[in-house]
Amino acid sequence: MGFYIFFVIFVIVIIFLFSSKALSPIPYFPSNKHDLPLIIKALNLKNNQTVIDLGAGDGIVIFEAAKVAYKRKLNTRFVAVEINPVLILVLHLRRLFHPNRQNIRIVLADMFKFNFMNFINFKNLITVYLYISPWYLEKIIENCKLKIENFHVVSYMYPVESLKNKKKIIKGKNKIFSYLFSTTT
Image (cartoon, rainbow, N blue to C red; front, side, top):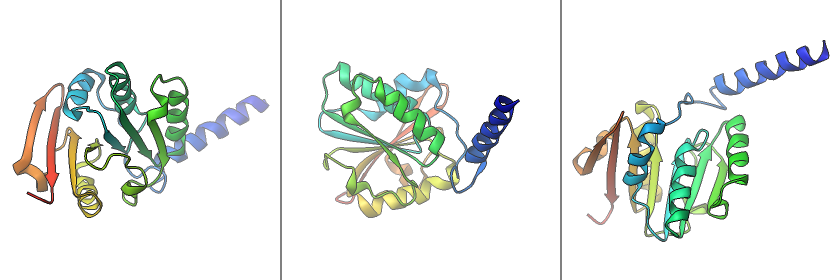
């Protein structure tokens, strides 16, 4: 009987964590596995680059990109930003067994209040990956513009309207939008 009570409480806690607007303001939907090679291509991995996944979820993109960088022997840093504690636990468990774990940082933070400068190692090549609801994209982009001078954005499924004149579109199962933003141009 005790196991069933524990299980019911556990399920209720998990449901709360995924439905709470404070702990999970954007619903969890992982990027489509079939589009991963195209997403990695759009990230344009290079040496001395920092890739930040805002709303990393279970880390499908960050961990695959880190694996590709590891195989290519690139000195690329990865930052997975997530607010949901259950997904943070999943990220930490996945990182434990990843061959490139020394280059992966996991941050429990609100993507709208995230301080990029605390986690950017390479200021010249910054890439931000986003797969979030379209009504939040502009808020995130404005935050990026305030804190980072030059950056590359890869947005999965949804275009960033304020950056539309600087985009490249890659078509997979879903569209992948790639943008460059610079304060000097």
